[in-house]
Length: 321
Image (tube, rainbow, N blue to C red):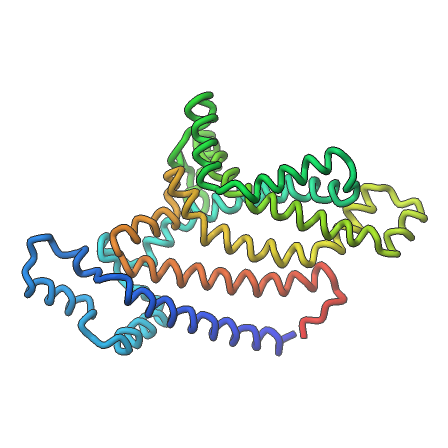
């Protein structure tokens, strides 16, 4: 176990190093941020002075060496626009994004698990076909279109829910959360449902396929012959044995939700990391973009590592080696 953990840690370091290399050099060819910082009336001398101040006059390999050294110290640069550390700005927005992702995950699991198990256990049932048709629709519809549709119907037409913003927040352990207040909880419903739709639909189809495969196994037939109730048969025997591939995809989806919540956050003006990223792209604020990509990459690597550990908890027969 210890040998495996050490091996995975070195793998994670290698992946993050490769990501830092790719991110830095790709961002180096996305335009000149100096032109976004200096005023339109700036002279050539002022532009050159700003480039020297930002260290952009150095060769790329020198810039990367400085960037890597700062990265190892936890310094991801200072925002060109906000004049504050990029890491601080992202950490301030992170609770809003994680809160949104957390509720979208809850919605996905609450709907996908029972629907997927039912559709897999009784695939020819008319309700199962309705569930699968709905899941296909959920995968096909783009999130930005769903978000706009939800805003139009629930906020504009019916006036049931707010259309944008995070609403009122309350502090827990020094961190502001929206779900702790009634107004904030109402604000989170529409963006969480919008963000959850794609994951929900994908999980339903995956769980259904795995349940259908497990239900054909001999141990399921033996359990049925022993008189095990359908509830225990489906949720204690079939679902547990179908969860390994589901956990794999679900772990990746968590990272995907965090990384690509930008569309949903932009549509609903949700003040999370994604909204900050979009604003930074519009202003060519390179430090924030690089810091965002590095943090998200680290989250992906960590989540994949945790998924491997969860494997052994679900199925002890799996050897980490």
